[in-house]
Image 1 (tube, helix red, strand yellow):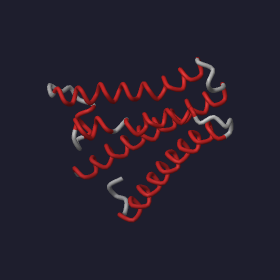
Image 2 (image 1 turned 45 degrees about the vertical axis):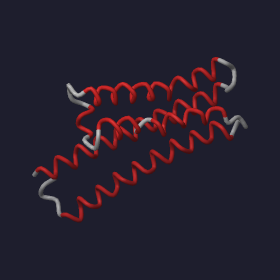
Image 3 (image 1 turned 120 degrees about the vertical axis):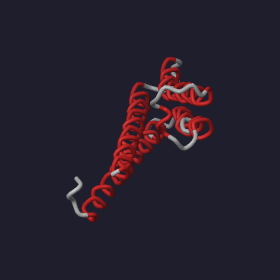
Image 4 (image 1 turned 135 degrees about the vertical axis):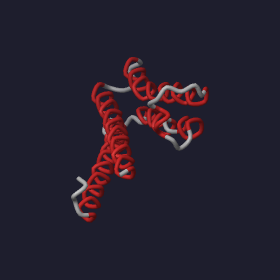
Amino acid sequence: MDDMPGYMRYCLNTGKLVFLAILVSGGIVLQVLACALYNNWWPMLSAITYVLLPMPLLFFAGSDGSSMFSESDNNWVNIAKFLTGASTLGGIAIPSILKHAGVIGWAAFAMELSSFFVFVLAILCYLGMSEEDSYYSML
C-alpha cells in the first residue's frame, strides 16, 4: 500500500469512514425500530448502556486506546476495563431481562440483540481502522 498515490489512500479511508457511519446508523435504526414497530419503548432502556460504554474509557484510561489491550499495573485502567465490561454486559442483559419479564416480544428482543451486535461490529471496525492508521503513521 506504500506505492499507492495519496489520493487513492484518502479515497479508501473515506470509504472506511462511510462504512462505519452506515454501521452506526443501522444500529440506531434497529434500536428505534425495536421500539416503534411494537409501540413499546422499554427496549430503548438498553440505549443507556451505549451512552455509558465509553465513559470509563474516557475518564480512567485516557486517550491511549492501546492500554485496553495490554497488561497494566495501573489500577485505574483495570477499573476502566471492569466498568466497560459491565456496561457491555448490560447491553445484552437489559433486553434479556425485559424479554424474560414479558415486557417485550421475541421480535423486539431479536432487533435489540442485532442492534447490539451491529454496534459491536462498528466498534471493532473502528479499532481496526485506528490500528491501521497508527501503522501508517509510523512509516
